[in-house]
Image (cartoon, rainbow, N blue to C red; front, side, top):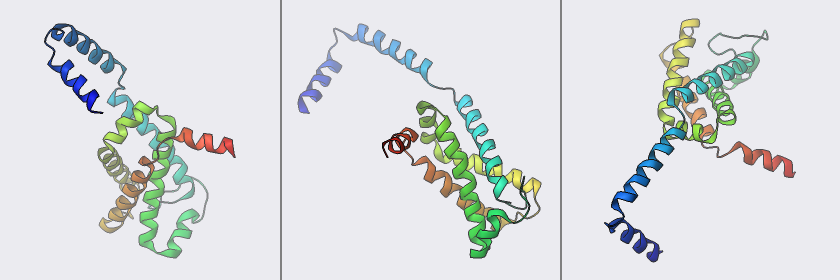
Length: 176
């Protein structure tokens, strides 16, 4: 390991290749910048995944009184048997884990890395926008329920960002 470090130091200190190496490094830098995904494109794809996740979640869980299909309590009925606090937190976690799972499966690896590098910003901004949208549609949102829902959403989003690669799941399923 020390030989590699010495080789690198001698390369970095070599002044004879300075003009050539700076040209090569700038060319590599330009090529890398061309290949990086656009943050706006990644944010748009995350938003589309969140809309799809919202649709799936709101089909079965009437968060804050908003339910798209299926009359009755749905998952909310089961969660409320445990406690109302658990219901709001778990609904937020379910809501975000489905959205981020869809994003994790559909986004390319370099796009997912962009989200993973700024996951606090991604999760918090999407959670606040979602909670704002739900509070516009429903009258049941107050400080306590909103805070519990945000906590659940943050935990659910964070847990899904820990997933390494969906292709590993597919490979494991094929081997069984």
